[in-house]
Length: 383
Image (cartoon, rainbow, N blue to C red):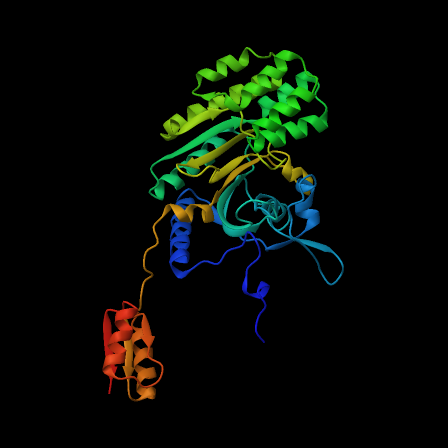
């Protein structure tokens, strides 16, 4: 039966990957995971489908889940990210494991949003069980090295802290609803939305001015001293001093020059509580690396643990690398006796050769033309 027009298309936001694109993606992922292992991170895997009871609570205000019913009538969702499923895994099958845990992954995630890609590949790490700023610095340094290791030259990381924004909100007594809208607009870098909600907030003029400055407040360590002049509230001071310690560690790791402080960073998931960061590559108007500290998420699973981590949006990086011809077979085997052809192919494969077998009986001219078209360097005729 001939497929309809819809049957010949793919859902919006999904994409097919050609052999050349798969080759690049697999190479990049292998290089990054090798680096993760060098830093003592161990790979884990979680299901594509989770119960919404696991992933839903963080997305209630912006329901971007792909949902399904199982045969028992329970609601399932395709995972929108890996941090929460790994928190579930650690809190169940890995409960009682020696801390800190260093875990990594490479997997597809799915978000039913209006963005360009709704299915994309992520590789990332989770460092579970340490509240030290050194843990934050480690994952930031690892993220920088991962991007640098791919050969990308023009990249920049920005580092902020959720405690500065939340401290301002606490001091000003901002309504939770307005705070959520402000945080959402800041996370999207929607300056029109930020200004609109600030003007509607009824906050004192000084607080409104500070909130309007946040998205543009970035630079080196000197900006932290200015932040301390904003307020004496402990939450803000603690956030500033935490950032200062992390930034010093980044110098020890030798990557501080690649990281700027940016107090306007807000993460799109509500579980972030401390230092947050983003990584950008020239020519791409959205972060290719996102991460930060989330010290309350594990409490939702009954096993309170501090944690930090990041994800690299690998699928979005593919366009930064030229498409190259895929590796061809080493040898094309053809001839007039199909049984002998099969046996010769199996013998060569046992020796580690990549072998393409001509299907059916072909003559010399056809075999050589086939090898030329497929860039197979060697042609082997079986008599």
